Amino acid sequence: MTFLKILTFLYSIGGIVTFFGFIPTMIDLWKKKPSANIITYVVWTITTLITSLYGFFVLDNLVFNIVINLQLLACSLVLLLRVRLWYTSK
Image (cartoon, rainbow, N blue to C red):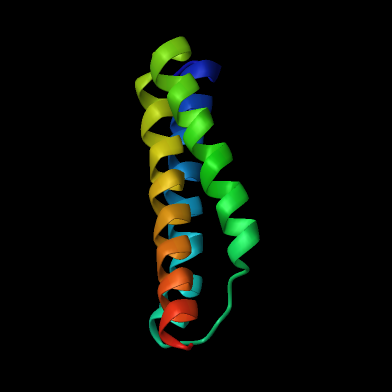
């Protein structure tokens, strides 16, 4: 296996690990524990969306697009859960 293939494999695994890293925050928010800052997740979701669009239209790299969109999904879910918690606690 070449260095680039190993690096690509590790990058894809890193994307999956990153997604699972968001799960404890999602669980906290589902249980109504406000453990995420809305502004932080708005910024992360927007910047990840821009990165995703860059990946689709400029890079055209399947592994990158899968990894960044897993992160976009995770950021978006955390943001939605946090906004839901904020809205229902009013």
